[in-house]
Amino acid sequence: PVTATPPVHLQAYIPYPAAPLHRFTMVSAVRAPVCLSAKSALAGASVRAANPACRATVSKKVVCALDNNMKTAGAALAASTLIAGAANALTYDEYQGLTYLQVKGTGLANQCPVIDSTDTGAALAAGKYELTSLCMEPTKFTVKEGSEFLDTKLMTRLTYTLADISGKLTVGSDGKVTFKEEDGIDYAPVTVQLPGGERVPFLFTVKELDASGDLNAFGGDFTVPSYRGSSFLDPKGRGGSTGYDIAVALPASGDSEELEVENNKNTAALKGSIVFSIAKADTATGEIGGVFESIQPSDTDLGSKAPKDIKINGLWYAQVN
Image (cartoon, rainbow, N blue to C red; front, side, top):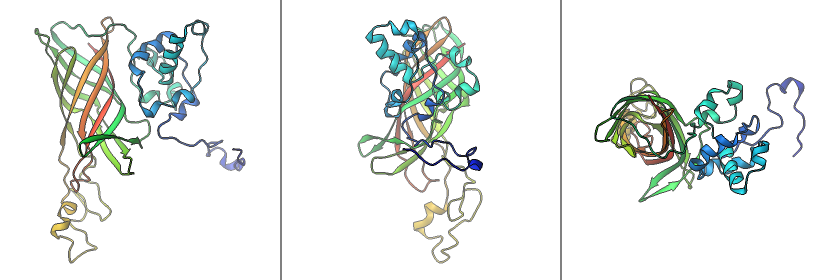
């Protein structure tokens, strides 16, 4: 629809024309789409072919010009290229070649690199390694209600990917693998909405992950910190390490048993578990990647409500040094 032009003194501050923000569509990608080569597109096609709803309509928003080689490709190549191109699948080296302005506003910063290799498994000799650049990109969030996990609507913008995580990786002579997470951007606050409208916040994380397994799959438990810190004040000014002890607006019943969980804030950490499956590897560069599935608790509102189980499925990428 045609809208009136904003006043001149506001044009520098108001985006024009205004575009509706769809939580499940990376609409910002239309501003500076990154056109992929056939090589990089095919590298991510096999892994990103089954993208979730949060990217289902991206291909309708991003249109990239095909080079001459891709124009002459067959229907299968075109289909796989569209799928990978819609997800802006780039390798690690291609990411390093982009400037800040090329990444800004495209959603690329929220995506993990893909591996340009046909190897389907990792081959590591026994020894101690450093696992670096671990990136975890969720593609689906579900919340347990009763006995089943329900699909959700993502309410958070494209800021939920974990990146630059590092730790010690040990491969035994029997092929067993252990990994201990040490550092990195290992948490991200996320909010999803259930079909009934209830919103569920949680802290997507793999802090202090202690995993074990083999070169096909490994997993273990990790720590889930409190979604809010002890200095957070609720609407009545109560907090864990500061603020009021009780609801002062209710002097007669502010410390009643019914309000005990609201008055006594709890910031204790909980536990989650995760499994990594290795689907691709490049022995020349030391890159490995695949899919993961994590189950962790949601926010407890500082101990005033029971946490919900959150299941997170997605893609991961790392480098072994």
